[in-house]
Image (cartoon, rainbow, N blue to C red):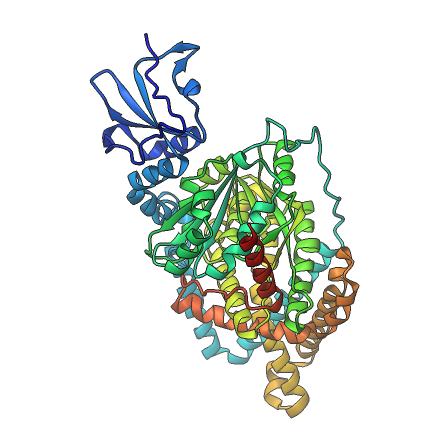
Length: 572
């Protein structure tokens, strides 16, 4: 019996490149095991002896050279530096990872995929409904218009009342139960941090500093830069900053759909962590966020699949648009999402700072590469499959959009994604009722879908009101008979007043009282949201999977942060 493991030291470095692998020894289905263990069967040395390729940053000679304390001669071990091991692994399974990142969810669970906006049954339902509506409009035009107006206004009011219920739902402050994990605790899980980037070369330096500030053991942070293979500027900047040595730089195949969730699926296939989280290019998470997330999972049950950190903005005071954006996010993450959690309703996740159990995320199919608000979809999918999402008492600060055109591009993509998500989850609404009850289904209709439909309805109500005030047209009086007209006006006035009230109180939980007065201008902000909603409606018909890129580092605060980060980097 002998120990066949090679011994390496500073003067006897491991091979820079592994020998060609024996393909039949390796299985794509075992990729996660290879990544987590830091070891992959690589080639046959003889009919009875096999050589493994090992990541020397994870495994030691003593860990692989013995079985039950006894030297094991049937395995040889070729140790590689982390970077070389990862490159070999990615090259070996490049085609499989590329294909699975795009096609797995669509092929294995087609009812969960937004690859087709509508499935066959939905197309039939839409065609029949449209046909009946046209027939009704031809035979009973005014009755049909009145019925439609009544239904639209009723939905608008129900969506408002649902938000009233959420705002006044008691939410308990977050408390860690059980023993709290500390930074030197052996039970801390490894966390994979995904950083999907596309044309974000300028943002890398501030993002990397934010990641390095996260208070967590270095050997338990598995950081992966996900960059499209044709994005030379971002790849070159990452290498210039030395990030390809400190993190794992993964180039994502430039195949459709060109979306963030497709890139995240690449990272998921190569994740070493027990938990996995996404940060966007401009994110600045609070330093103790990883530790808080680890504790949230450590002291919870198996049904907890995800914790969502709160999101807000570091450039709130830059201009009117950033102030209103901050008010909206404060309402969303500090009031509404915690209320959904308290009610046990499905929670549409934000696009960043959501922590998942990696194995659970793999089990449910990962991200949908065809959905342009992939995390909202995941939040609903988790609820539908019986898992739970909770809100984490930690904040990630981002760059608020400070330019109107850029804001509309971003918001129209969000609303298009919400429509995609709604269509997907209405294919089998019974599954939602089975796990969350009728209240869960109602929440999806009035909250998730309500964000888009309310923005589409609001201009209609305004047009009726202004047309009635200015023209007094008998056509309006006929289409909106007395009670219905006043019902529309009530919905418009009450809805706007209530949303103004919500926007005014939104920042109070953070003590940002100076922003409250800007809530009075919220109706103008909602007008922009309506523009984005109609753009989303057009795009979901003609460009359903197009990912409209949001420009980052355009605010004065973000630009200054980058300058400071570059100066800090130059000093090191």
